[in-house]
Length: 446
Image (cartoon, rainbow, N blue to C red):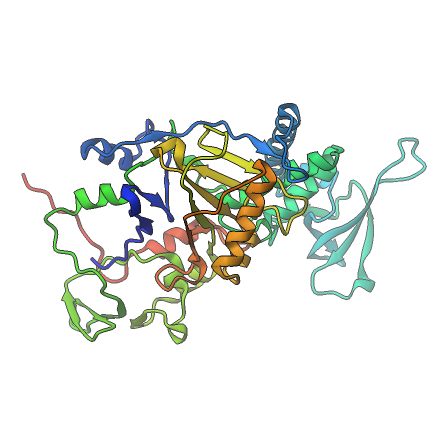
């Protein structure tokens, strides 16, 4: 079994700060990792849902009613986007098509794919009919056509290439909600939190399949491990022969059967079968850019699925202090921003002190801000993080230590976790996971 386990944690001063994966979700719903933690005596800290939100304009706490109202609106936008997704391929959607809806149009006896690019609504007195302006795929705009609604020339077509950002923006406009400046900043925070969940800018995420795995979620509390995931892995790995600091550069299926793996140092490993568990970002890396060489090359369907799936970035900045100067005792607190480009920058802070008693803050960077961080040096990042804290708390001491992650450029990950990109589906995960060659068979004893 070849794998690279990214613990990415720091044990300085007798504690653990997770710089990679941290949250264990649904510990009462059958999550096998939770069962393993219990079996191996690894402590779990239950996370609360409370998250005080500071307004990015001035730094004061946002009024709870504003926060609650915007969160309710945000959840409604997600719900309506889901309904729209379900209705996209239905006849009902064509009765009142929105701008951006794709449909098939009958023209001179043939069906053509087109998109609604403009709308005119009926005035209710019969003097103005409802109409939709259609743009035919691949045709010059001079062939755009106004069609009176409803029309028997239209039939459903599955939407292609819709991203989640567009879908939510459309729902916000259709809702008619009017947000003041503080409300808009709060909405950007919730969108940044969704980008945190997806590890990507929302305009890169499929509106149709972004939540395809929700049905597999485990129920129950979310927790973190005060001793870190490393504590669990060390106990599970006790007695196993594991080669550390061994970088595999080539994997080869032998003509006569069996596998061969070659390391960067030239060591050759032989086996009957090989289980590949490297991060998706490493699998997506082409050989010419230092990716793993596969002989023979991976099958075309698997390569296509790898290309479609996204592997996004979430970065963290760990700030160590002599003492906890912040007033919050909650596990998280947040900070809003005024626009899309900044909304994921130091938008969420994990209060390590609430979990372990150590005066440490983990500042999170999501969406496009997570990628931008990797272009800055540690001093610039530290100053930006402190500026965000000063905005909320006033005088802030200098940290005794700062650790910055750059998962997007880490050669053993090239990202943080996966998302379903525009054009991808959940089936692509299954395609990537399919075994090559003889499938592994479980053996049982009577």
